[in-house]
Image 1 (cartoon, rainbow, N blue to C red):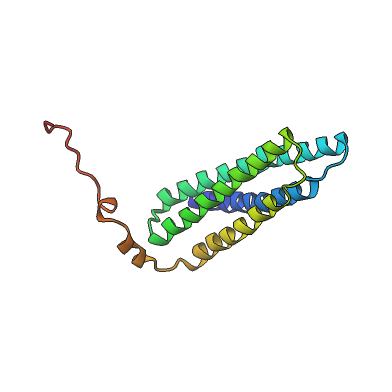
Image 2 (cartoon, one colour):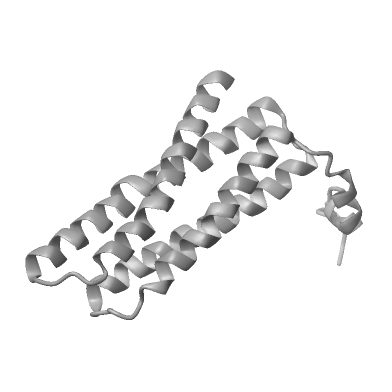
Length: 162
C-alpha cells in the first residue's frame, strides 16, 4: 500500500512540476498570438493543459501525499516545512490558472513578465521541496517557534457549564 502511494505521489509530483514549468512557457510563447486560429490554439492548449493535466496531477499529488503521511506515520518537523512550500506551489498554480482565464477574456500584449515571474517563483519552490524530501533535515529548532497551544491537543469541555 505504501509503495503504491509513493508511486502515485512521485508520478503526480513529476507531472505537476512539469506542468508548472510548461504552462508559463506556453503563456509567454502565445501571448502575442496573431490571428483567430492561433489564438484558439493557444486557448485550447492552455485550457487543456491546466484543467486536464496540471490540476489533476496536483490533486493526485496532494491526495497520495496525504495518504502517505497517515499510512507511514510521518509527522516530522521537516514535513511541516515541506507542506508550507507545497502550499506556495498551490498558490502559484492558482495564479497560473488566473492568468490563463484572463488571457481568454482580454487582449494582453503587455503581460509577458507575469508568466516568467511565476516560473522564477515556482522553480526554487520545487527545488526546496525536493531538497527537504531527500535530506530530511532536523528541523526540531522550528518547534521552538511554534506556540505551545498549537503543539498540544485541546481538552474538550463538552459537559462543563459556561
